[in-house]
Image (cartoon, rainbow, N blue to C red; front, side, top):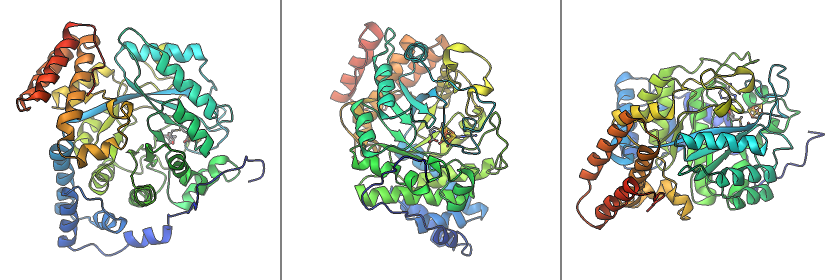
Length: 474
Ligand code: SAM
Ligand code: SF4
């Protein structure tokens, strides 16, 4: 590790991933039917599963039982989580990187990558463009480089919040960047970040060492595994986990994610806010054999199993996947998607149609516009939402509250989804999307019982339609 800066760990940092144990859990005989059904029933009760129980679901290969797992994920989505889908768009700030992750187009040894960091003015231009189509939530993405330190990240966050465009504003800025030390997390928190995401990429130690050279910062498995524990200790309790599917056995990785979520729950009393499950994509200058190793059927199992295992965690399905697969996978409990995304540095303003390979980290599968995705979601019976109320009101652990506190969704989530949808329809939507959206809002209103919540909601929806008032959150 010589030449690398000091890498601070959390108090009592521990490597809680025991590869041998996880492999052993997955190599048992096929489980009894009843055992699987008991675990499925537990999930329907919104109880988190242990890694042992999750492994039982993953060891099942019987088509009938798998169908029950998918149906349960679908039922949970319909009856517990409801039809809201939160929308966001990533904003890539800079692709300089000191690491050499062999699967990534930004890796330092990639001679084809064109290195670039947005200037403050360029950042503002990207934000204005995103706001001009109706984006309200973004995640800022950075390579790992000394110049992208906590102060720099905080500065970018402030710039994004301060850049307004008529009714357009980004109201929640999440971060996907390198792990920080305690001081760094305090710095980014003071800039008002939402979720801090760090993907472990793979929980399997040998694979981790193989794809992250040991003489790099990212080569330190424990430092990364512990990254979000330091965030918790520094007061950032809104964190996101993830695995890059395709690096190692997908079943093992699902257990790693569940183990990580349980670790947070045990240590800090709350689980992760979100889990992401990016799948490996082709990238410029990358020749990695894992491409395509997790097929669509297995990917569907990843999502359904996570939905059953971690009831209070939001699931993010990114635009790495193609449009028709996203449409299908949404059913199994996804709660957030990105739409209208561009991942080239400067991509929101500089090129409209084609992806620019040498400035992006990987290829996107779904490059449709936000309006097109909104239209499809509405057609499929979803309520697209840009809600940012909870974190702005200090209601942290919102995903937990949504599902654990009776009536929370009716009182807060649905009204906020509908008011933010109405803002989109009035300010940005195409005529077809607007018509579909207004119809959806009326259908949702019809489900409310008469009373003060409904009356107030109707009042605010009308205010948005008839006046310049915006951001009327509950
Ligand atoms: N540099 C920081 C890091 O590595 O944590 C943060 C940003 S990195 C640009 C965001 C994520 O993109 C990585 O954590 C990884 O999971 C994912 N990624 C990298 N290469 C990819 C590829 N070829 N296909 C799909 N996702 C990829
Ligand atoms: Fe750098 Fe992140 Fe890409 Fe690794 S995944 S090379 S750390 S940008």
